Image (tube, rainbow, N blue to C red; front, side):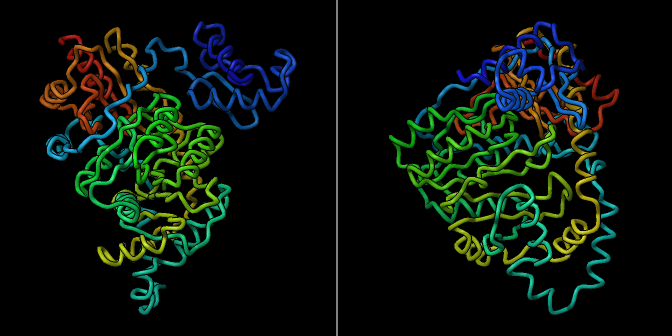
Length: 469
C-alpha cells in the first residue's frame, strides 16, 4: 500500500468512527503534512482519493470537509465476482419488458435513465435554436450535414483543450447522441463473433448493442468504488483474443465507480501493450461533484487507441440527440459508417447547442446541476439508511445520478420491480445490467429528480417490500 493510500485509510477510519463528524473540516494540507510527516503532494493524493470515495469534498477557498453522509451505516457493496470467460448476450427481451413499464409519467422515477428535465435550461436552448437558425446560411444546412456543424465542433474541441486534451478537429465525428457514437465505434473495430470486454454490471444498452452485432461478452468485474478489475482484465487480455473494450472510466452506469488517474494510466498501458482499442463511454463526465473534473483515458492516448464518446443529453440537452466521438486512428472509419447509416444528426439541434455553448453560460448551468444532483444523492442515501433493511449495501459515487444497491441475498429484484411498479414506483433491477442476467439481489436507483414527500414515501414503501422477502 502506498503512503497516500495509508493516509487516506487513516482519515477514512476517523470519519467512519465518528471522530471526524459530517460537515467538519479536515486538517489542511499543510497541517496534515506536518502531523503525518509526509509531503504536501502525498496529502493531496490522499485527499483526492477520499474525494473519489465520496468521503470528503472540497469547498472553494475553504479547504476540505467531511461529506454530510460519509458516516452513514449502509456499507459499500461487495465487488462483483469474476464471470465466465465469454458469454453470449441475450438480454433484449428482458430490457424491453422493463423499459416498457417505465413510461407512466405518474410513477416515482427511480428507474429512469435521465434526471428531471426541469434541471435543464430548455427555454434558453430554444432561444439559442431560434437565434442560430435566423443566422444560418441556407448553404450551411446542407454543407454541415455530413461533417457536423463547425461551430459546435470548435466548442467541443475547446472543452477538450480546457480539460487538458489536445484534440485535432478531424478526430471529431458528430453523432445522433452518444449511443450512435458507441455503436459506430464498436462496429469500426469488430465483426460478428468477436470478443468484447465489458464491465459487469454494465449499462444495459451496451449489452443490447453486443447482442445486435452478434458479439460475445467478456465480463470484467467492477469494484463499487475503484472501477473495472484490472487484474481480471490483464488475465483475459492474455488468454483471449479480445478485439475491443467498452468501459466507463468515470461514474460508471449502473455502479457509479470511477477509475483513479493511476488506474486509468495502468489500464491504458495494458491496452497499448496488447493493441486493443478502447471505447470510452464518458457521458457523465461533466456531472462530477468535486472541484476537479475527472481526466478521461483519452488524455493519455498517444497511439490513437481510444475512441472517446460523449453527449449533451445528460449535461445540457436531453432529447436533442447530439453526441460525438473523438475517434483516434479510427475516426475516418467511424465517419464513413455514419454516412452509410444516419448521415447526420439534426442540424438545428447542433446549431442550437453551439450557440448556447458560446453565449449561454454553460459552466454556470453545470455548477448548479452538479450541486443539485449531489444534494439529491445525499437525500436518497439518508432515506435508504432510514428505511432499507439491515444487510443493504450502497455505493457513494462522486458524480452522476445513480446509486447501486445490493440487497440481502433473498431479495429478487425482478420481483421487487413488479411489486414496486404496482405501487407506482419504478426501479431498474440488477439482471438487466448483466450479460448472464446476474445481480438478482441488486438494483439501480436514480436520484436525479427533485426530492419530495413522494420520494421519501416511496423509499419507505420500498423498505417494507424489501423486508417482505
